[in-house]
Length: 380
Image (tube, rainbow, N blue to C red; front, side, top):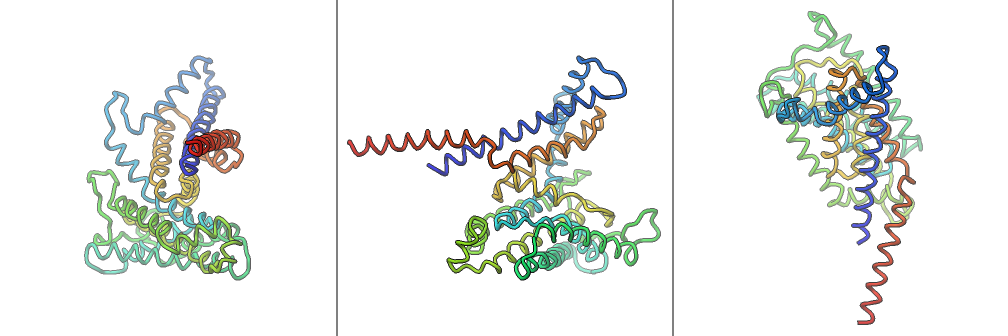
């Protein structure tokens, strides 16, 4: 019964946070028109805000004619691929109460390593792509050892070390890209093209960008959930996250488990970066952090660190991203509106006291009901 109560509360709390965040976004959209150089009347501001919201909330899946936008759905599913991996990575690390933010740098490093393997390794079709992704995951798992060991051995804050490491990774990648691996025949800084054998194919052809990476992502959702809820390592990670002192005095290897959680997180994030690069692009051309790691933090918070809910959260964020892009294109509203909405979601989900009164009333109400049932049972 307690689990059902908390599930109900978490659902209501999540829905309220999302609705309030969308309301905040609506206010900012209205202000965008109200403060525009072209002086709109109040009625025009309301009309333009409604049109912008239609593009943001309905436009990704439905055309203006009302027809279902199949290609739009494929694009949303394709956009889910990297953020599903970073969401899973963040879920694992946050479950151990490790606020590690290096998923962003791991995505970039994973994409770069996979790209180099795709260019310079000569292998058969199918196996080549697998090797690229496995090497990317292994390298990023090793990279994540740095903040993990600093935390365990020196007590350094994993949040600070991982955050700074993102920029170290970015500049190291850019150094090697610019100095050693750039194709000088191109007008912009990028690598040589990937070998055809290393590319991850599209599930739906003709430019949908929906690759087999989506299937791999869903497989790893299941594998991560099994790891977290059906293995002793996953149990140890969750126990340390819930009460590290209790876990330590019960005989668990706290240090090793903290390292494990961050290494697994790095592996997942690096895999996401590799799959994204080898599926969506023909050359490596990222010149800055791609942003998937930061989005993964929001997804983990939306999913309450539960891997099973990561695809739903990833779909929601990918949908909003697509909607905000359409809104920016057709309604002249800044595409950064998605950042405002994500920040509001983060704020309400992170606020422990948000709807705490409702939670208390729910617990009291159900406790009274349980006591009455118990009393009736004793009388019978």
